[in-house]
Length: 422
Image (cartoon, rainbow, N blue to C red; front, top):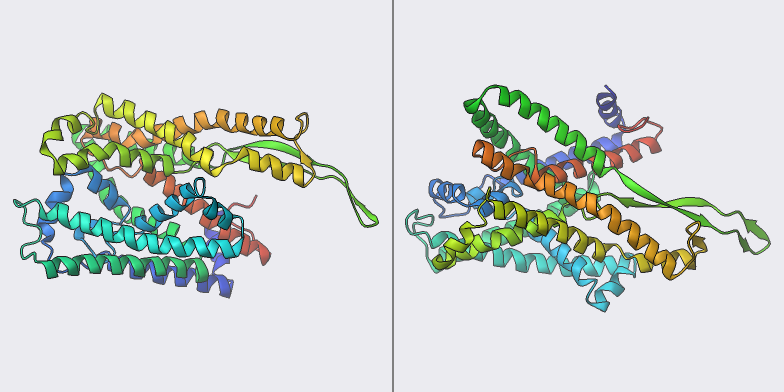
C-alpha cells in the first residue's frame, strides 16, 4: 500500500509527473526501435542462429530482444557501458584521464565526450563483427542478398541506432527520472522476462508441477536476498577534530565511510562472462578449437569452476581500481578526519584496505552464486536464460532501488512521504 500511495503522491507533483511521463515516452520510442529490423535480414534464419549460441542469447537479453532482429536498436546500450568501463579502467593507468576525474564538472564533460566517440567505434566494430559472423553461416542464409552496399547499410543502420539511443539515454538523465543508460538496460531486461519466465515454467511443469511452486518461491527469495545484500554495507567510523575558523570554533563531527558488500556491482559478472565465452567465439572462426571450447560449455564442471574463479578475481580487480584506500586516507588527513584508534597516514590506508578486502570475499562469493543460477537451471531444466539469476537480476534490483531513491528524494523535498520512508 505504501508503494501505491507513493506513486499516487508522485503524480500529484506536476514537475515530477512530467518527468515520469517523459521517461515513459522515451522508453516507448526505444521499444519501437527494437522491433524495426535492419534491411535485408532473414528474421527466421536469424532466430535459429540465436538459439544455438549462448553468447548471442546473453547479449540479446541486454538489447531487449533487438539483437535477435538485427533491429535499429539491436546493439542496445552495451557499447556505451563498455566505453564507460574502459574509461574507468584507463583512469587507473593514464594520468591524464585521472586528472580529468579530479577536475569536477569540466573533467566529466571531457570524459563523456571521449566515451561517446569510443562508443561509436565499438558500435562499428560490433555491428561489423555480427554481420561477418552471421553471413559466414551459409546454411541458414541470414542475409540472402548480401552485397557490399547492403552490408554497409546494415552496419550504418545499427551504428546510427546506437548514436540515437545514446542521445535518448542522455535525455532521460537530463529531463526524466533516473540515470538514462541504466533505465534503458533495465527496460531491455524486463522486456525479455515474460518469454524467459514462460519457457522456464513450461520446462519445470513438464518435469513436475511442484517445481513451478518451488521456482516461484525461489524467485521471490532471490529478489529479497539481492535487495538485502545490495543495501548492505560496512560502516567505518570517522571522527573530525575541532576546527578554528576566524574567531569561531567548530565542534568535531562523527560520521562513517560506507563500504558496500558488493562494491564492484555487476561488472565482475560481465567481465567473467566475456572471458568464459571467448573460446566459443573463437571456435566459430577456427573449427579446430571446437573441442577445446566444448570444455567450457554451460553446465560443465570446468565451466562452474572457471566462471566462479573469474568472478572472484574480477571482483577484487575492479574494486582495487574504483576504490583507492590511499586517496581516501589522504583526504581524511587533509580535512582533519581520523578513524578512532587508527593513526593517520599509512596505518589508516592499511586498515581501510584490510576492511575492503575482507568484505570483498563474501561479496564476490555472492556474485558467483547469483551468476551461476542460470547454469544450474540449464542443468536441471535445459533452459539457460532465466529471469531470476545472473547479471540481469542484479541490474534490475540496482536500477529499481536507485530510481526509487531519486523519486523519493524529490518527493521529500516537497514534504511527501516516499517509497522507502519509514
